[in-house]
Image 1 (spheres, rainbow, N blue to C red):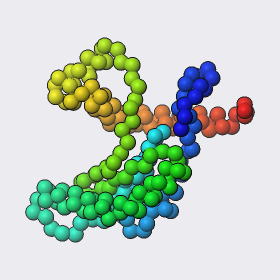
Image 2 (image 1 turned 60 degrees about the vertical axis):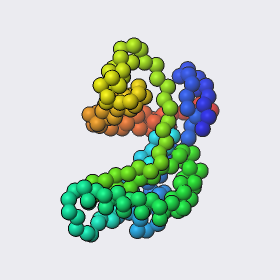
Image 3 (image 1 turned 180 degrees about the vertical axis):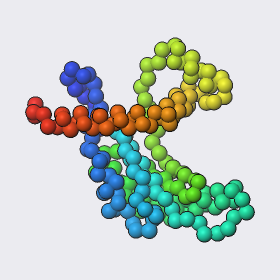
Image 4 (image 1 turned 180 degrees about the horizontal axis):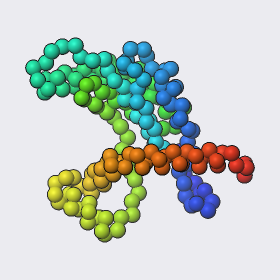
Length: 185
């Protein structure tokens, strides 16, 4: 995963294999019985995150807090019992897709992501943008500028899902057209 000069466009992240088939590959690779259905698989340029739904709890619980504690305990047990197999599957997927692999599990209202990648991002923020981040820090919403930036990106993501989905679809169409074009190599 190197970086290199990409002509008129400037510097670009080196090409990594497509992860479009990652969900299918993992569906065939994961042991039966780990999850109640197909896991949610998301991929970006650096990481593939696999989150599966665990079988429902059968016990009765005094309140929501007790149920949440039981869900957390079941997820913790799954994490420990599957560690070696998850590491081996992740190793194979990392080799195949040239990305880090992270795991998670959900049960009822509880979702836990295990070790995930935190990728540094280059930003060139001008003073007005930095002041917004500083306001979030001063108000106690975030502990640092980088945490405030994460908060802001998540907020935009929550409110722009439809727009971002349309944008991703358009980018896929551009990639398809590019692939149909002449080979310049």
